[in-house]
Length: 272
Image: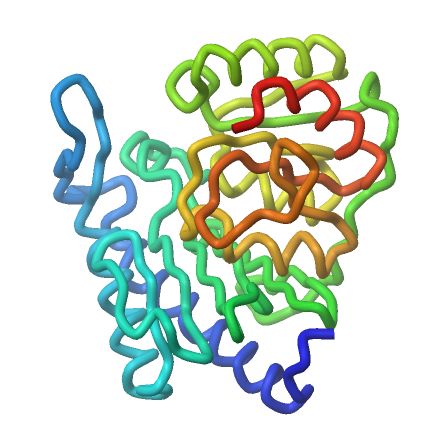
């Protein structure tokens, strides 16, 4: 249980769906169009940001301020505002900007809500596909474009040799030790997919992927996914098998706790 009254959680859940709709309205006109690309990275580092990133976060922040002026916000594009509040929204308006600028519908909008420092409600939205994966301690569901809701449940798979796993980009996201651990894990599994960013998290909740391994995450990359995965029956840990802190870092997202434990045994030597 989150400790929140069911009526309050339902109210915030409904507002979260409204935030996803507003983000989609800001993003979709720029998808596969002139998205106003800038590079935030330093020399030798490509860190893209688009008008869609900025416009969507601005729209979300405006709605939060209008509805809940006492709430705090942490966002990738516009930083922290009242981040010591009882309720804090954690935003990544376009997670997977590289996919976005390549025209691939694998980017998502991540919106999480912390209550008293804990992630209690979150969504992974893919507006182009009309999918919003939303979750809390009361359960997780996929809300379609027409508003139809389908319950989400992870699948049982404790055997690493049968697992379907994913990560974003082992070449650019992992250091040498992390890459070696990923390579060992990948060799032990049935199938691995790359480049899906947070959409892969949604697929764990939906029961089509078994495990996602990431490193170097920020809080806005993972906060929103934790309630979705946990509400679907899965778990999110660090590379030592412990709970993920409020700063992100090395993350394992799995549907089966036995699978997570087996993966952590391989990943632990590279844990920081």
